[in-house]
Image 1 (cartoon, rainbow, N blue to C red):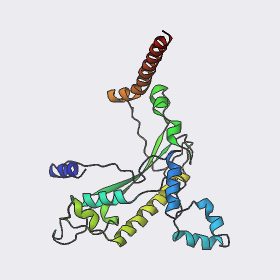
Image 2: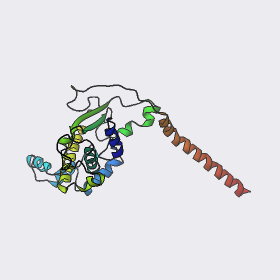
Image 3: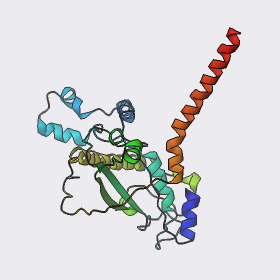
Image 4: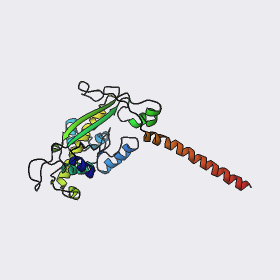
Length: 262
């Protein structure tokens, strides 16, 4: 990743990197794992709060929530380490034109983070898009999601608490030179972002309205999605492979039975 980014900077080419801080997709397999990880970190579901704070009134409970980390309900719990390392590393490739590189410098505003939240029409909160729309349903039966809603927010790197980064720092220094306070600040920042994302998904209108508050300013684009040649290979390799396997097994069983009877 670093080499690719550096080459892009040297050629003055655009560079984009897609990263999932939660590590994987929200599904019926990954949600329980995320919940177990949250509980191991002392993070519990909001549904448990009445049992944890039975004698706290609503105002007190609201104040308590600001110092309490509830688990996500509609998304997976994010991991901060990979994103923090990536942002710190990339910030060394986009130097600010001001102070000298010998001292810690503010990172360049030319490095931008785009925070994307995606919702699919027909998929209500706390259900799983990949259970509704699969490769087979989309490309085999021609049933795609009617609309894919994307909430996009751009964040300048200077507004993200990634800590101080030396412009001359190299890959081996990026992880070692961050302080525990800087790491904690970033963890709290990304958790706050995900809490907003979780609330956004909880208010998502699966009937077609999309994300709350975006009905007036949203833009619509239509495009056709086609399978590449290698995608067709991936789709057909599994059934073909299974068919060949069972043919071979059947042949082996018949051969064994013929020899055994003789």
